[in-house]
Image 1 (cartoon, rainbow over the protein chains, first blue to last red):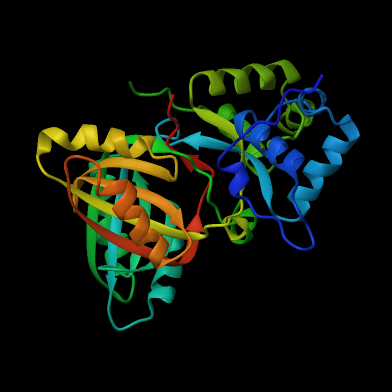
Image 2 (cartoon, rainbow over the protein chains, first blue to last red; image 1 turned 135 degrees about the vertical axis):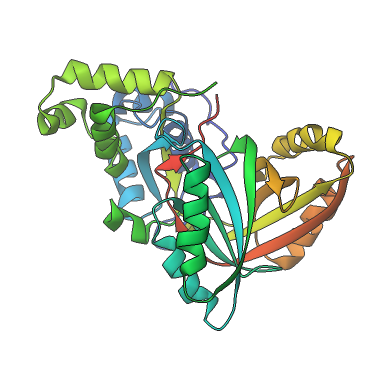
Length: 175
Length: 155
């Protein structure tokens, strides 16, 4: 017997398109997969009241349309990174978009966004220890052409982190 | 509170899951030359210990509010920082909250539709939190990279 439709504020923010309108059942499936990405098709079918083959085809359709991916996310610490930094970058003499592309090449930098505000780029990065921070800032980021100033902040306590906004295109090829 | 680091086999399993986490244990086991039971046990342990999380991620291009806003917050007094951060973490629209050293006291990240919506959000949800002295925002223009394979996994 199907349970009520699971409400998930993030799942509900995903907008369908003309070619792929999303209904309540899609949002329900996305919400369930956000809770447990490895939930068996059989359980997904039980919880939604859909047949197993419908569940399969709906999930495949979401994946094929690049709306959704089910992935393993690794904790920084378990991967050996103990420090996390948010670094603002001021750019001079070069386009911020180009500088952002160069910064995105460093694997320690896991998020890069070109912004308007006091800075031109905001990025989030991890480091193993203090020495690694020094190398990352002074030997890697500071040497990217066009970087004028770096304004780092070190995260000492992460209270909330829902990794739910991602870019799909570039990343699959990086794996 | 530090977490156990992943060993070599853990990492290989995670790499297989990072491409498509709905791959069967059997397929991963065959690829890596270990038993299915080993793969199952490792995944279970890594999930239980918060080393990995297997979840659905969504494409930012398909979200209704596609613009990232980085909200940097200065707090009235150092003693209030944790309380303000905790209050921000309660706000449903905010996806990331960290207490920081350096530029500001707290960084909060949210998704908005545009500048106007950001201003409304700051006025109605952020500035009203007792202890918030000043905010500074960076509004995303182009989201260049987000490696979803890495995150801070909270209990």
